Image (tube, rainbow, N blue to C red; front, side, top):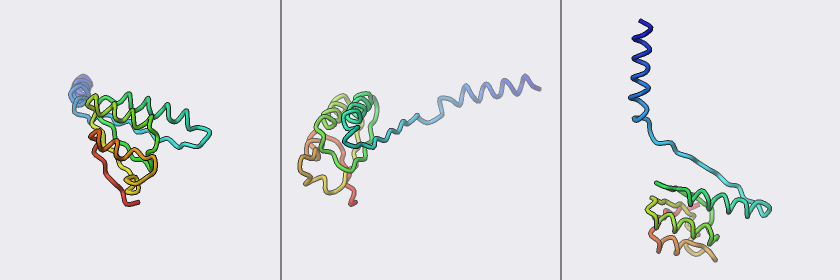
Length: 111
Protein backbone atom coordinates (compact mmCIF):
# COMPACT_ATOMS: atom_id res chain seq x y z
CA UNK A 1 0.00 0.00 0.00
CA UNK A 2 2.81 2.42 0.90
CA UNK A 3 4.64 1.59 -2.34
CA UNK A 4 1.52 2.32 -4.41
CA UNK A 5 1.08 5.66 -2.66
CA UNK A 6 4.72 6.54 -3.27
CA UNK A 7 4.45 5.59 -6.95
CA UNK A 8 1.22 7.58 -7.32
CA UNK A 9 2.79 10.61 -5.63
CA UNK A 10 5.84 10.26 -7.84
CA UNK A 11 3.68 10.17 -10.97
CA UNK A 12 1.70 13.22 -9.88
CA UNK A 13 4.88 15.14 -9.19
CA UNK A 14 6.57 13.92 -12.36
CA UNK A 15 3.59 14.53 -14.62
CA UNK A 16 2.33 17.61 -12.80
CA UNK A 17 5.47 19.70 -12.97
CA UNK A 18 5.19 20.44 -16.70
CA UNK A 19 1.57 21.44 -16.19
CA UNK A 20 2.39 24.11 -13.62
CA UNK A 21 2.23 27.68 -14.96
CA UNK A 22 5.27 29.75 -15.69
CA UNK A 23 7.15 31.35 -12.86
CA UNK A 24 6.72 35.10 -12.84
CA UNK A 25 9.26 37.29 -11.13
CA UNK A 26 8.08 40.66 -9.89
CA UNK A 27 10.49 43.36 -8.89
CA UNK A 28 9.62 46.77 -7.48
CA UNK A 29 12.01 49.68 -7.16
CA UNK A 30 11.46 52.71 -4.95
CA UNK A 31 13.89 55.38 -6.03
CA UNK A 32 15.21 58.39 -4.18
CA UNK A 33 17.99 60.75 -5.15
CA UNK A 34 20.38 58.73 -3.02
CA UNK A 35 19.51 55.42 -4.70
CA UNK A 36 18.90 56.62 -8.26
CA UNK A 37 22.08 55.23 -9.87
CA UNK A 38 21.82 51.86 -8.12
CA UNK A 39 18.12 51.60 -9.01
CA UNK A 40 18.78 52.55 -12.64
CA UNK A 41 21.48 49.87 -12.87
CA UNK A 42 19.20 47.24 -11.32
CA UNK A 43 16.31 48.14 -13.62
CA UNK A 44 18.48 48.06 -16.75
CA UNK A 45 19.94 44.69 -15.74
CA UNK A 46 16.43 43.33 -15.16
CA UNK A 47 15.17 44.60 -18.53
CA UNK A 48 18.30 43.34 -20.31
CA UNK A 49 17.81 39.95 -18.66
CA UNK A 50 14.23 39.53 -19.90
CA UNK A 51 13.98 36.72 -22.42
CA UNK A 52 10.25 36.13 -23.00
CA UNK A 53 8.14 38.94 -21.68
CA UNK A 54 8.44 42.19 -19.80
CA UNK A 55 5.56 44.06 -18.17
CA UNK A 56 6.26 47.55 -16.85
CA UNK A 57 4.04 49.96 -14.97
CA UNK A 58 5.70 53.26 -14.16
CA UNK A 59 4.53 56.62 -12.89
CA UNK A 60 6.82 58.40 -15.35
CA UNK A 61 9.57 57.45 -17.76
CA UNK A 62 12.09 60.16 -18.50
CA UNK A 63 15.22 58.06 -18.15
CA UNK A 64 16.78 57.50 -21.58
CA UNK A 65 19.05 54.73 -20.30
CA UNK A 66 16.06 52.68 -19.12
CA UNK A 67 14.21 53.45 -22.36
CA UNK A 68 17.29 52.20 -24.28
CA UNK A 69 17.05 48.89 -22.40
CA UNK A 70 13.33 48.61 -23.18
CA UNK A 71 13.97 49.25 -26.88
CA UNK A 72 16.73 46.59 -26.87
CA UNK A 73 14.27 44.13 -25.34
CA UNK A 74 11.75 44.86 -28.09
CA UNK A 75 14.44 44.45 -30.75
CA UNK A 76 15.46 41.03 -29.44
CA UNK A 77 11.86 39.80 -29.55
CA UNK A 78 10.80 40.12 -25.92
CA UNK A 79 7.05 40.68 -25.57
CA UNK A 80 7.02 44.09 -23.89
CA UNK A 81 3.94 45.79 -22.41
CA UNK A 82 4.11 49.17 -20.72
CA UNK A 83 1.55 51.06 -18.63
CA UNK A 84 2.13 54.79 -18.30
CA UNK A 85 -0.02 57.62 -16.98
CA UNK A 86 -1.94 59.53 -19.67
CA UNK A 87 0.21 62.57 -18.90
CA UNK A 88 3.22 60.69 -20.32
CA UNK A 89 2.21 61.73 -23.84
CA UNK A 90 3.17 65.32 -23.11
CA UNK A 91 5.73 64.82 -20.35
CA UNK A 92 8.85 66.96 -20.84
CA UNK A 93 11.77 64.61 -21.40
CA UNK A 94 9.43 61.63 -21.47
CA UNK A 95 10.09 58.53 -23.50
CA UNK A 96 6.50 57.89 -24.63
CA UNK A 97 7.04 58.63 -28.33
CA UNK A 98 10.29 56.75 -28.41
CA UNK A 99 8.72 53.58 -27.01
CA UNK A 100 5.73 53.95 -29.31
CA UNK A 101 8.04 54.29 -32.33
CA UNK A 102 9.94 51.17 -31.20
CA UNK A 103 6.71 49.18 -31.25
CA UNK A 104 6.00 48.89 -27.55
CA UNK A 105 2.31 48.36 -26.84
CA UNK A 106 1.58 51.24 -24.49
CA UNK A 107 -1.47 51.49 -22.27
CA UNK A 108 -2.29 54.82 -20.73
CA UNK A 109 -3.78 55.03 -17.28
CA UNK A 110 -5.95 58.03 -16.44
CA UNK A 111 -4.33 58.38 -13.01
